[in-house]
Image (cartoon, rainbow, N blue to C red; front, side):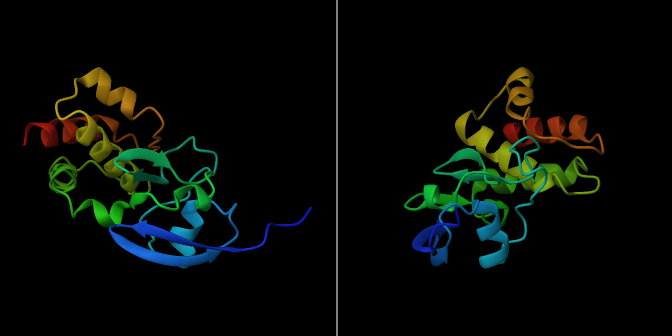
Length: 157
């Protein structure tokens, strides 16, 4: 059984429509990185278990390393590159900088996207809600305490 034939799709990424031709089973993260050259979304585990591939789809957090690209046609996808276009995203990014909430930086884009999606959905989350929202995100450097502080700071801003 071979790969399905490529299909033409229109994806809206960070507010811009992109016409792409891809195997419909290709995970979105590969299209973002390889075809659209948006390198901020990272491929970590490839199993939706680390959060490095997080994007927002119609305002909700989605991990993009497994879901086929054709599932995103007709939806609005926001990557880390587009987060700064929103007021909440700007606050989150500023708070991450102020709290030095990144160490090696590999997980940071996924965490910033997750924090932005959280604050879009819940502008004043408590600590338990914030921790629950970050459950799918791994950071081997151990910056989670600073990430929590950054999210709390962004929520208060």
